[in-house]
Amino acid sequence: MDFLDRERLAPLYARELALFHARIPKSLAAREIARGFMPDGVPMSWMSAFFSHPPVFVDAGEGSIFRDVDGNAFIDFNLADLSNTVGYGNTAVAKALVDCATRGIQYLQPSMDAIAVSAALAARTQMPFWQYTGTASAANIEAIRIARAYTRREKVVLFTGKYHGHIDTTLAKGGGPESNEPARPSSMGVSARATADTVNVAFNDLDQLKAALDKGDVALVLIEPALTNCSLVLPDAGFLEGAYEMTRAAGALFALDETHTLQMAYGGLIGERGLEADILTLGKGFGAGVPLGAYGLTPELARFIDKHQDGDTVPEPGIALGGTTYANALSLAGARAMLDEVATSDAHSRIAKLGARLADGLDGIIARHGLPWRAFRYGPRSGFCLSPTFPRTYGEAIRSVHADFYNLRHTYLANRGIWDAIVSAGPQVSFAHTEQDVDRYIEVCSELMDEIAAA
Ligand SMILES: Cc1ncc(COP(=O)(O)O)c(C=O)c1O
Image 1 (tube, rainbow, N blue to C red):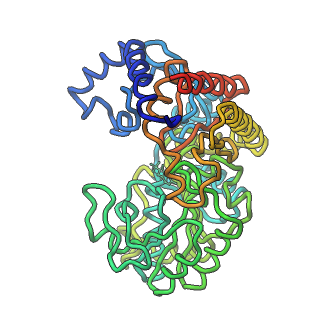
Image 2: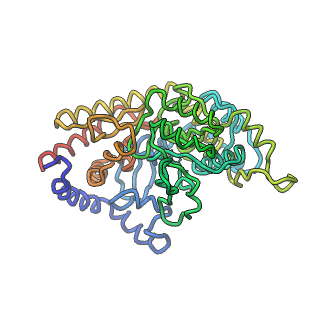
Image 3: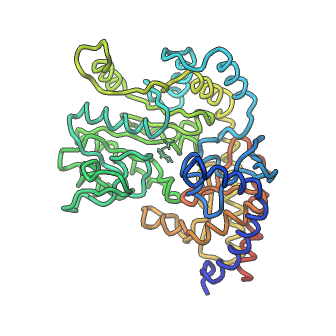
């Protein structure tokens, strides 16, 4: 029988799920009330869709730990899918947010923090000009719109296995450069017209990218510098540099989406490796858990959007950018505290060491069980890679996204005080984690793997 055989995992999962239900009576009762007001009893569908067990209603958190209304404590390795890398109750961030909130949260005029945040992002990433949105998805929407306006072309090239948010253009599958069929919607409710201008090519494959660009109709190549939403795929040496050169030569724009990778390295991959891009989109953790997205621009693109502003007092229609609550004072105050006082270069080095400790621990468990696996490792991120070699493509990466193993693992770990990452990601340490937190994750995982082996 295979180590992850369903027959082995199913009885353990049934036992753990029953235990989980028994541990969360108040959450279950709250959800029943909530079902009267919200679909599935949650304010945002991911909160129940991400996990096979019921959601817990949260009470409060401190450091790396949050507690539910039943009093269960969880060391958090999901970090709200990297939107809460700061941890819980950070005093510098809390002070900045309270100071701001007592003076005023939202003006629809710039605050001084906008200058400080832009300067900090520019220093880390070398992208000189910045705009802010409410989310990373919104930053990607604006990146696509700017590229279409600038190049006067329509097509957007994406990489299979990507995730850029719930944006119609990017919710597309198929439609590779060799295909005669256009890309089609990958989810319900997206119109076929919205995905017809999307081209999906394989990650780490410059030949496919060239074939897509050779048609001369591409506005934007939008890429996560590492695929982080189908386990983890790191770029081959020279791939991102080659993709940038090729894109520029084809008259298209090149956008890096570092929504996740900015949480994994100081300045993201663009800062760490000195990459080049026309647009850099960000979101999640750099806003200290307060909704915030951003995009960096070259001077040329900054001038372009300056020239083509759109608004009630502007005579000619320009590019529609912005939103009423984007760049509000509160989110920029949080981001300033986050960048200046939490996500410093030293702090990134510290969490990278913790990430390596986590990966070493998982590698130890894998070796002890003689499994043909290894641990993912990139800065603070790790997790089980269910093959002996690291993936280079989506097809290879998706093999590590194993639903039965994941459902058991999340439930088993939750019953022992660990909140694991969502299935498409891997455990990641926040700025609030300690060595003890990491060791506890390894210890509980080790117990789980022993139980699976004995089943
Ligand atoms: C690489 C990447 N870009 C964009 C997004 C969208 O982020 P948000 O849902 O915060 O808009 C995500 C979310 O997982 C992401 O992983």
